[in-house]
Amino acid sequence: MNKALGLIEAIGLTTAVAALDAASKAADVTLIGVEKIIGVEQAVGVNIQLAGEVAAVKAAVDAGVEAGNRVGIVAASRVIPRPHDEVDKLIEKFSKNLKENKESQENKEVKEEAKKNKKKSGKEE
Image 1: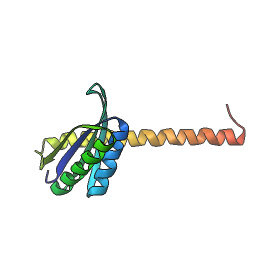
Image 2: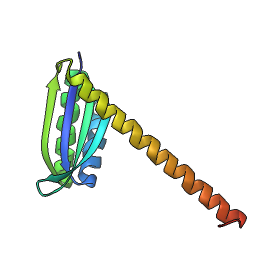
Image 3: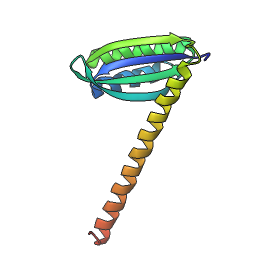
């Protein structure tokens, strides 16, 4: 892999969102995954995975850590420049999880919209 992998481990969803927002604004990086992890410093952690050019990922992770620490606690962060090809398998897993979560959320929204439409038309079951 010619790009870099960046990881930010935030405590709590609010901290993770703040970190991701700052990281995304700081540099041209791609969100490749997000995972909730139970038990990080006796709380719920959110691991954010980013990919892009080495300098961009470094800048994004630094900005994300700084913003996250203003809101809550960032437990860990790491930038892995040009990771070994075997790490691509892990990155594919991250990407697959993100896509599955997105599809699940879209399906939920469609069902909620259909339920609202039934209520409006007076055909509630």
